[in-house]
Image 1 (cartoon, rainbow, N blue to C red):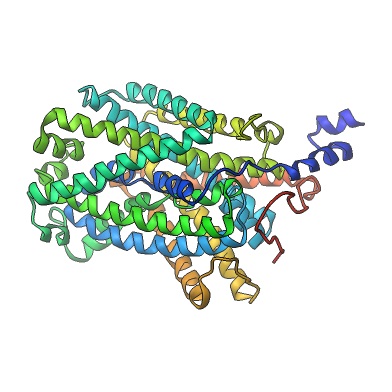
Image 2: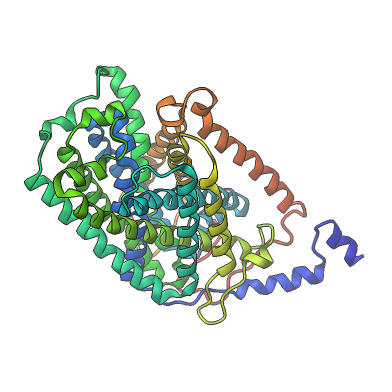
Amino acid sequence: MAEDHKHHGVETPQEIAEDKADSHLTLERGFNFKTIFALSFSDVSPIVSIATVFGLILAICGAGFWTAMPIVLGGQLLVAAVLGDVASKYPLAGSVYQWSRYLVNPRYGWFTAWAYIWGLTLALATLTYGGAGFLFGIFGNDSPSHTQLAVVALLLAAFGSGLNIAGRKILKYFFYFSIAAEVICSVVLGTILLVAYRVNPISAIFHSAGGTHGSAYLTGPFLAAIAVAGWSFLGFEAAGSVAEEVNKPAREVPKAIFFSLLAVGLIICYISLAFTIAEPNISDVLSGKTLSPIAATLTAHFGSGVARGFQILFLVGFVASFMAVQAAVSRCIWANARDRVLPAHRFLIKLTKHEKLPYNAILFTGVVAAAIPFINSPKVYGMLINFTSAGFMLAYALPVFGAVWVRSRGKWTPGPWTLGKWGVLITYAAAVWLIFEVTNVMWPRAELYGSGWLAWSVIYMVGGLAILGLLLNLWIYRDGGVHVRQGVLEGIEDVDLTAK
């Protein structure tokens, strides 16, 4: 009979009892506020943010794109405040998954994790593909083929995954080194460009692009700019993903979530302004003659030698961001495996012997991220950026909606870090912002995704993953959730898991 149960994919009572032992599995604590701030800082990354979206957003919207940046930052700070509030109550590995799980129920949490896992895994592919372009630029190849970029992206994915498995100390020091590179590339370089290499007037950031003006500009290029700019302010929740590895997580994680976004967001606005003002020929970017405006700006003002030096720092930022994103998504996968709500959970829950790192979850994300850049499409980079944004925004929206639901019923009890009397207003405002931005990112646009069916590619992607997720969820909960971990996790400090 046991063999028959296994054949049909249903666990026996003995297997269920064995799996319940997973509830004592926890990750080793070794991170402090400085480390998780660096983790979230590297995840958002001003270098990566500006290098990823600048050429795309400038070509769509012209210099006027810049005014979208503070708008998006403001909306995302609302989200960060709400997620920080919830993270203080539930500082568990897996961030958005755990927050939704305990705010609403396990199935709701599972769908949040599904969106988050895909959003972050696609982000990994975006980072390796973008980093590959800078690596070729360092060696003087400004026009690598798609296959060349994909192969180098694969190698970068393997390198970053190896460092993630190597241990927390290596992770810490690499993040600290990355922040130094971020400061040089962002603050120092931005200041030099603004002081010594102003080509365009400050007033240019308030002008529309090309011949599109008035309401057509606001509802067309400018809304597209807000959609693309969203990519620049994602990843701040990474501190919550490693909460079980943090000392005093209920107090330190919320601060890292909010203040890392605030710090990085201000730097992103600063460096994007600097590059816009220093861009030698915006009309060439708009016409498509200049495909890499950052490289063109650096080369025009500093020469090819210095420009390549800066591209090395950009590459460091991309690798650090890859490692931070991978650390976050691998913990989410591991937390789902611990709850036994993913296929192959016995494989994905495995930890390294000494530092208790989820090495199989890390390897899984690395393999998927390495494969995605081989998709051959002229718009692959723009699609990856917006697939990532859609996944992230949906993963943020579900716990925020959960917080709205709990607060609307008067059931919310805060953790040590709280929004206080402003909590209700901020939570509702964050929900409105996310509804707008999710709709905006998914809206079909030829200038971002391509013409014809490609314009609908983000909707197809989200819809396809939603259907696949629904089918997988029905299969996972085919026994009514009997096999899913129900009890309180053992060894978890500083957390109240009172059900709502």
